[in-house]
Image 1 (cartoon, helix red, strand yellow):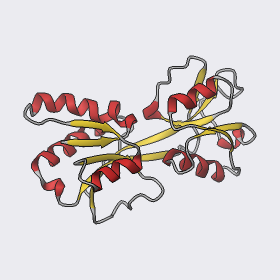
Image 2: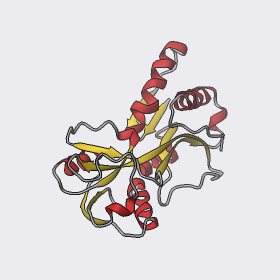
Image 3: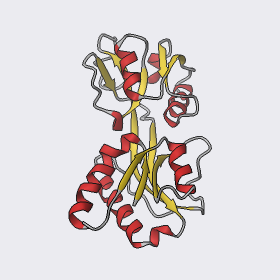
Length: 215
């Protein structure tokens, strides 16, 4: 079974699912390949992947798209990431409005997390002053570590490897929905069903999971 997956979902669900499947279904091989949200769906549509693990993103399919069978896995909350010496770094929770005058670091404009971050800031009453753009969460944290600004980072990308940054929950809990999807009709196929159900079981065991339903 070929799985095109977000890199952040590998440690969260794909790796643990593979461990259990090797024990329970030794004849079933799962092959994983990192893809961004759009590329994961393109691989699925092209027949290059049997399952895609992706997130809701601009231009992506609706949850009820009849072309796919979908199961929601994890509601991945985004936290503010700040330099350790920031005045709000030790807060237990912050309102994004308190970061309105900061310089910001963000992902690509069409990236799901970037869109979520901008929407959350807009709801808080401001447009973020984005000075730096990066497609890597480690790079975002590195820029925060260097004092270049603040940002939002999903919990699946944590813990961060920079000791001089802090993550702080946001009062509005902005989040992205991580889900597994296959082409309509494939979820009834035995190997596909086994892998999808295992991904769902592993995700449900996490404290940050939501239980989805077949699309």
